[in-house]
Length: 240
Image 1 (cartoon, rainbow, N blue to C red):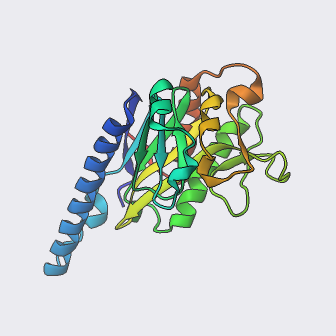
Image 2 (tube, rainbow, N blue to C red; image 1 turned 90 degrees about the horizontal axis):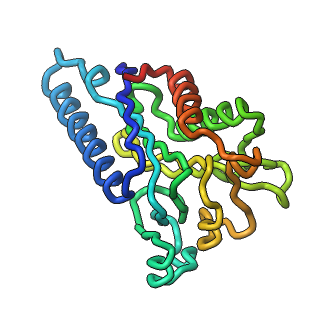
């Protein structure tokens, strides 16, 4: 299995540009994997499929944007096109799972483009492992993150339905065990932008950020290092 993962920090990048770059890496990996599998079926001596498919771990931030997953509803966006322009925000229906969410400066977005044949072929475990990396990262800042039964992502005060709020949203796509899209971790974003949507289609739950919980802005580069470490350890990957 190829445990090496190419790590890239794309900085602040337009959502559509990042989506296109993701799609290229994703499609190339799926195509290569398909070709290798066919070669393996045609040639019994060929056994290299799990050692040559690449893996990527992408960190970035986006300018203000709302994205709607395949299971989402357009009415969960509470802004007109004119209001989107006024807020300098864009909107994209996309091909991940989940409903509507917001991305913007101060939010760390993570796109793992992994061939899960190199790690484990279990989407449920994949999501729980990403959640665990965020939970461990929050713990290093004295914030108690946890899972909320029935929902993906990482939550605060998940045991109290009246206080439960999401600090990290998740939505993924997977084909032939190759993943794309990922998670959005609220570090220092302007949470006011979440008031323009029904986040993830959940009407009665709030959102949170590390800045809001700690009372001051957090060094996002430090959070990146911590999260990267926990992802690497939990997946048993070696970032290069």
